[in-house]
Amino acid sequence: MTNSIEMVDLRGQFKKIHTEIEEAIAKVLQSGRFIGGEEVANFEKEAAEYLGAKHAIGCASGTDALMIAMMALGIKSNDEVITTPFTFAATAETIAILDATPVYADINAHTYNIAFQKIESAITPKTRFMIPVHLFGQPAEMDEIMAIAKRHNLQVIEDAAQAFGAEYKGRKVCTIGDISCVSFYPSKNLGAYGDAGLIVTNNDELAANVRSICNHGQARAYYHDRLGVNSRLDAIQAAILRVKLRYLDKWNDARRRAAKIYDSHFTASAIIPPFSIGGIKHIYHQYSVQVPNRNAVAAYLKERSIPTMIYYPVPLHLQPAYNRHSGGNAGAFPVSEQVANDIISLPMHSELTDEQTSYIAEMVIQAYEHCGVQK
Image 1: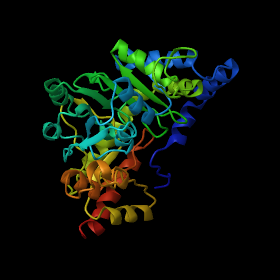
Image 2: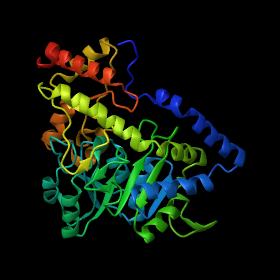
Image 3: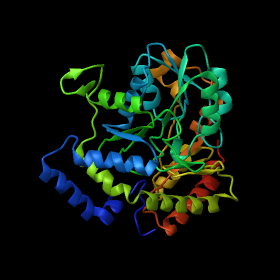
């Protein structure tokens, strides 16, 4: 390939919209209003309209969004929160920071999302919340999850850090649970040029709680009604996100096009491509396949200037930071452990050409034939 292949091509994306981005940033700089203000209010309004939600509240990061959502719901010490062991650490990290307990349910081997069939056996009298993660841009099976929540009087926090723009049975994710959390980390499908996050809810009381918590527990200046944090979306990031939101559906369509090309190459191979459940719109934040001898395959591709990433090499229940919650028991969640051993993510972004995508797929198959079957 004559063109360099990037895992995520943020520079290529920026070149196409740089004039709009630079004008948006200049407008903020000229206003002198860097925290809150018109740009933040407008982005929150536009994000809520895009999702079909009542409230969208900016914050400083996706990690903060998770923590603030749980605080707004009134999480208490020793509450149990059911989630997946196969996700980024922030999901369990924020639970533990709030002195609650992450409790895991294994994943579906095809979707990599929490297996709803495993949830009810994890519920105890201490269980108060569930956090399904829409991993890699694919919605979790929310009908079944919400039915379980209703039966057991649990509240649901959607972790949509990787799934802004994904749809589940005609509804955007972030609008199904009680409250939802989004990350705008730069590499996300909708990424800021720094850290940023969003909290989404249709509940007026929860929205008021969130706004207060994000701003030191204040409903009005210098009157602190609750414990809060300093987690505000700054105006420059909001202005950037407003520009990029206008392109998001187009970019997500480009990702789906690339995924179809990958799929077409892998259908007749022994490589396991990502699986999409019916009735959803996957946005392919990552395109992750499973291959044996994954590390050797990655090395083979690197020699041919094809970058890869491993999300995630160690499930959360085996991470030392969370041993006191899970006991670090190998074999406790066998599907998560098997997937973590074999999964590898290929380049995926809106700037991939069809030629690049086909070339990557062909090299993956070649790598598999060369070293993938060697255990």
